[in-house]
Length: 92
Image (cartoon, rainbow, N blue to C red; front, side, top):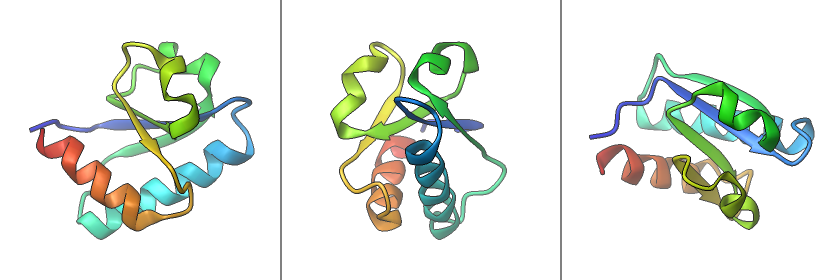
């Protein structure tokens, strides 16, 4: 089981989309009953230096993060999709 302490939500510029992702991920974690996880947001360029346990991005830019542990979402505002994918990732 993957233990998550920090999730970083990323987009190209680290402003609007990543903030929306952060809110979606926080709602998903709440639905899963998971607490104590830091959820940050920023740009893809910041990802390697943030040392997160998991990076959440839109599916279109998953490949940009290379070998980092990444979770892609097709609907950035769908907390149900985020919860489902987070649950699968945490159970792996």
